[in-house]
Length: 67
Image (cartoon, rainbow, N blue to C red; front, side):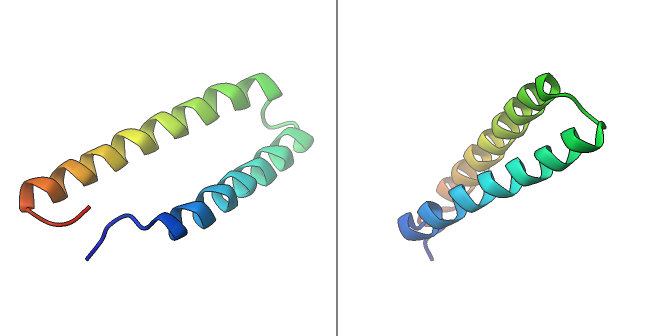
């Protein structure tokens, strides 16, 4: 079983990005957060997502599975 498929990633990545943009826009328009805070939050989400993905890939490689 492949963990990462090129076609899936090319579809999911932009959809996730647009969903986050929509949520952030709604939060900004309601006054819950500022545009500057979005930069910090987005950076944190991307960093944590990258770390989680690398951990999953390394774990699968240790088990001898396909990545």
